[in-house]
Length: 210
Length: 210
Image (cartoon, rainbow over all chains, first blue to last red; front, side):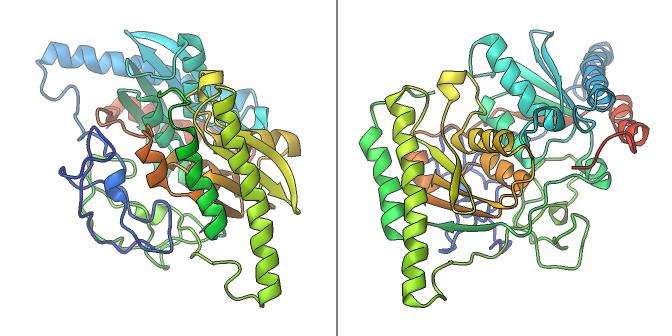
């Protein structure tokens, strides 16, 4: 259980580096029985960098206009989700080289898929469209601050920049559904755990890194 | 940025409850410029409940055998991911009333989809098969401790119990890819943010709760 104790080790380019600043992730991200602090295993976001603050006025205005343009598309998508009955009012746009790659909205109801949030849907569609799983040359514009699942997906896709509009509180106020107080989590007992650990030894070298 | 300070408010059945124990989530889950501590807005997992510890010996053995059976299927799936070249060695099984609903493996390479981890794929398939997005009558057995994205998806789907085999460190040791040290996250400037906040006011009452 989360105790509020600061991380004792670091994060960085490599998951295993241990000499950098504290990770923002709690040791209980994956609750465990042994109380091990594993925050150093998880990556930290870059510090927030308001993109227009340090720019000359004209450049700052252009940057803000650009941001507004793509965020407006995400908001339009969110309205579309509701108008079409596809899901809740959330939209997300993936942008590459100043062009919209995909513009998606929440499809949870339409697809009967609890994972079909706008951001996850946009990442899936962008990967397909660009033919790659590494979106490190892309940005995302989201109508609302992503939930933990979507934030995780953004990181996995290596998107380089995320700009959002409404805060998570706005989504929560209208009844967001990240709650699951009754989830029990446990590691399997000895044999099962061993079987799973051996999996990596038995398959290493047989799969491609990505 | 995460400072290691303990949460000052609570969590619970309702996102907005504020009189319970500290949340395990850091205020920087969604990094923000204003430093607001919002951990109380995020749900905490139930305390870990080793299911077999308090049971009579025979029942404990039966529970362990049952767990082992489903975890073995998840591990078999993980081997399949590698054998088929579909992705990395991860498998996940959704179980309902002692029966396997779906058994899935990592499809990231096969589907060119950064979000197609075994757990997310299993939730998507289970939702489709059962025709609902609420999997609160289901358990998940995963070959490995889920990444943050998958853990978020488990919570969103309301799965009631998660049993995993290998620890996250085992996945990390073979080169897991949750790292994105270069992600910049920002809230849009005034107008864009306002546009997005208004979205909820303008659509409330028009979409179904789920």
